[in-house]
Length: 117
Image (cartoon, rainbow, N blue to C red):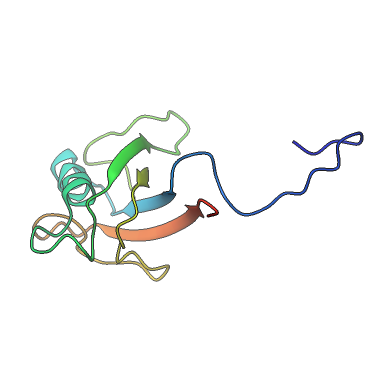
C-alpha cells in the first residue's frame, strides 16, 4: 500500500485470481427463481460451447440495499462477483433476459479486474 514513507505505485490488477468481474443483475421485483436462473447461467455458461458465456466461479453474491437482504418479488438488483478467464457477453449496455430461460433479468458489467501477466 502506498504511504508517505513508501511511495508505491498503484497499477491495474488484483489479488482475486486471473480475472474477477462484478456483474449487476437487475429486474423490477426479481423472484428467487429468476435470480437462481441467472446464477446458474453465470456458473455453467451457455451450455453449447462454453466459450462465450463462461463457465465461471461465483465468488460472491450481494444485495446493495439498506438491509443487505434479497427479498423475492421485491429486490430489484443483485451484485455478483464471478471469477474465470472465459469471455462473458456482459456489456456495459446490458444483456436482457440473462439466465436460463426467459428471465427478464438484465445483466451489466460493473467492474472487470484482470491480473497483470
